[in-house]
Amino acid sequence: MGGFPLTYMSAPPKAKPAPANEVVDFYTETIDVIADAVHKNAVAHGFHPKGQSDDDFINYQLNNLHDEISELHEAWRSGKFSGFCDKSDKMLALNLPPLTCAEEEYADIIIRVLDQCRHLHINISRAIAIKHLFNLTREFKHGRQS
Ligand SMILES: [Mg+2]
Image 1 (cartoon, helix red, strand yellow):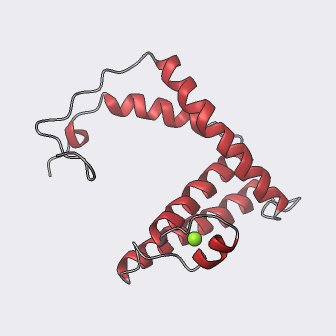
Image 2: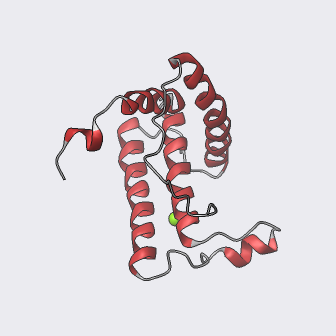
């Protein structure tokens, strides 16, 4: 028994919600460090042109985010989800472990979200923590019948 994937012999233990501030601090410290780094890199690579309005930024960036989701879906649809991504040779040349298509595209999605939120001054780490705490209180399948 054990190993991956994890299987439960019975229903998984119900999480006892931690005090809000404790959970918020945990998520904030971790995600904020990554968000700061990816935003700094995006600025350095020219993805935040000066003078761009927030409306133009949001329109352009949401299209990019949608493209990443489409790339992830295409990887799955074409049977390449678990195969190495097209940048894996370059990753190896940089002494980085190669990523699968799924790993790369999920990472792209998260990186774009963190970068956009930093640009728009949205405290996404706080929002994730609060939304997670809220979700812990919701009904099974959020009260919808399957
Ligand atoms: Mg991508």
